[in-house]
Image 1 (tube, rainbow, N blue to C red):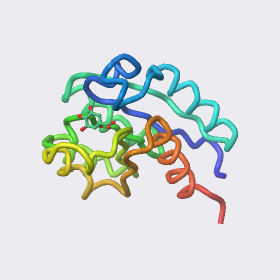
Image 2 (cartoon, rainbow, N blue to C red):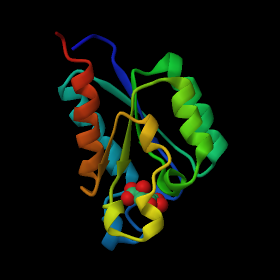
Image 3 (cartoon, rainbow, N blue to C red):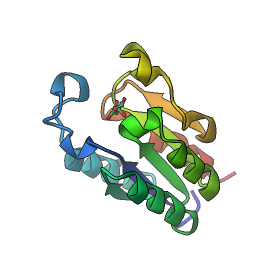
Amino acid sequence: MKRDVCFLVLNGPNLNMTGTREPEIYGIQSLEKINRSLTDAASTIGISVEFYQSNHEGDLIDHIHAAKTEYEGIILNAGAFTHYSYAIRDAIAAAGVPTVEVHMSNVDAREDFRRTSVIAPVCIGTVSGFGSFSYHLALAALAELYKEE
Ligand code: DQA
């Protein structure tokens, strides 16, 4: 691994409610707990992770822009913004930071509106349907990009 690799784990609207929100869909682990397990997993592969959650579109966009100079990758669960926010899509394209789209639920197996992702075309890939482990799979995928030749 290169040294000083740091990824931003960015969570969008309602994800602060993870653990109590529709637990049959999103599980019973809090976002804080998920984040702690990601910190542990990242440290075993020599990567740092930092976390931010917001319910506000502009706030998420500001963090995506800032990631350009601060992070080597973004693990992004944009929540419902995934399905309609062209502004978040444009921010990902503008920042040019490798971004993995994450969903805990299998969005393709749910309501029709969740089958559209307007951010997918500007992300390097999508992980969906593995509960909190979706974040870990995204971490592993991003880490692959930074492996020593
Ligand atoms: C979600 C799926 C979205 O459709 C939904 O709006 C969310 C969470 C997921 O993690 O499964 O808020 O991104």
